[in-house]
Length: 292
Image (tube, rainbow, N blue to C red; front, side):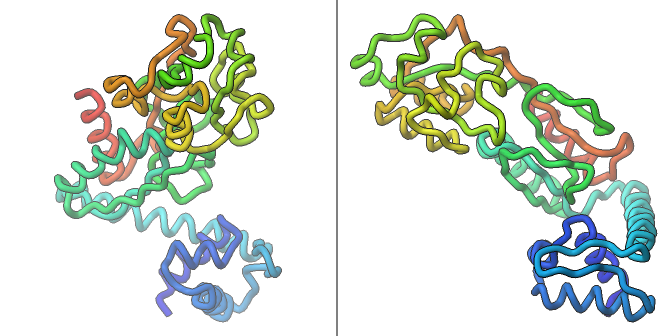
């Protein structure tokens, strides 16, 4: 077997604790992932993983070997990056994680233009509203909306994310248009699901009307909530970038303009002050595109 590939597989399994997850990442079967691990264990003459039916964990020897493997793989990546910089020819795959709405509407067109300009770089774009730990996930670039917690990640602001209130003309014709945030508790509201945090905390708004216990519909898809609002089922609080077309054609009407939540920063995050050429090229392209 290819020892380098087996090392890459081992590191991924150690980080994610699952043969099945590794199998998806490397586009092989879980059985083949197991063969890579067994090959390393036979070669080294020691057990690297404690296996259970649901999860894998490192043995003491496995922990030592994991640290050495990550160092070796990082050194190889640095060597490849040095050659790419020498030739000024970025190549490889960049893995990006982004919130769904921003990724679909803003990021996807930018990345399509990037692919046309840089034929030797591929992109893996994961759209996910859940928070991930970029330091422990196999991801190169993360798009994050909102204030950032202190971390060792490098952050560069690329945009502001403005949320707005709106409803359909038919809903407003049947219900008195709210004039204050306190009026919303007497309306049918459509709420976004923010993992384990309530909407009023996530959005810094002084109303519980969009919290789970008060909403007619809760979803982790802004698009699904917009469809419901277009049908006249309630009041929506979603990003302006998702609603501009509906505002322009009158299908949705903005309300409570004086009470919108503060705009949230959109940042691009990455791990190193000196990222690889492919990652740096990607980040600079995103920044330049957003400035335009």
